[in-house]
Image (cartoon, helix red, strand yellow):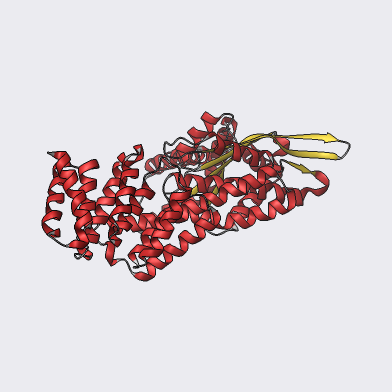
Length: 468
């Protein structure tokens, strides 16, 4: 019995290597040769009872075939256990791949257990799946980490060298170098983004003191978990899974607040601010994507009022977190207009214009439309001219959204005949010129001699005169 236990211990220790395969095949072969002869007489009797007696020669063939199949099954099992872990679709897979010395394996396993608990203890945790690489595989470069993540369909990898040192204060174990790798759709990230994450990584706990082992392991797992969660949120944001990104970023803020209270690090403050801005962006973009589906399906005015109010609340919360991002105010202005709060929408769009970069044309187009709707031709014309003078006014996606919005609003408010001027103006300058001319002519016919539309009619005639 002692020899069997020793054999199993050896197999467990060397399972992932060639000598482990040999030991596994020998163990399976021996077990087969011991168990099957005891079962064979009973199988032969059962076969005769069923009316299918087995000849001696055939029985020997079955024995050898069975042995071969068992050895093949053992080999396939060994190969399966050695492969890179695979994650299912929609899982947020994290590969934990430190490179420890053999004597530190138990320390690394405990850290793995703490990190798994840390990731599973937060909202959206059922999507977080943490896996270790088999011992025969290792990650020693960014290229290797990226290759492993692509093979596993994972999202992030934590890797680095784990070492131990002894000083006057006792034994310390931890990462001498720790790295994080993520995979996402092609996109260029700013150097400031890399610097922010690098500062956070530099501030995490990397070593565990022997005299305070459990507490230090928990702190290290928490610190690593915070970085991993932020990076996964970043990947979700880049991959345009905004609602999922919100579920990752939202519970991350309280964790970062606790860390800031304990460490009071400038880098950590910057990291927390970046996470807050990312959360604000994802919250606004999540509602914008939902709004966009209504827009392109020509159901803009079928959006429930309760949904519009919820989007407004989301953008207000987002602007509280990131008050200098104009997109939150621009989105809110749209939702306020759809609720009939036109004056409030104008004030919100003006706020967006004040804080937006000068090269951005969207606030000008937004205000131009709102002033047009209100019947203020002078202000509308001024904003359209300012917007059209900017290079960003050539953004095809933005132009198509404007055209979709104006057409649906014109159907909803047929009495606002001046909206056709806005439609013609945008088509004329940034869409199809011939279509723009037709829209302008249609507007002039509809305007007739209406004194309220006189200024708008003069603008349409000026554009048509330039065309001739």
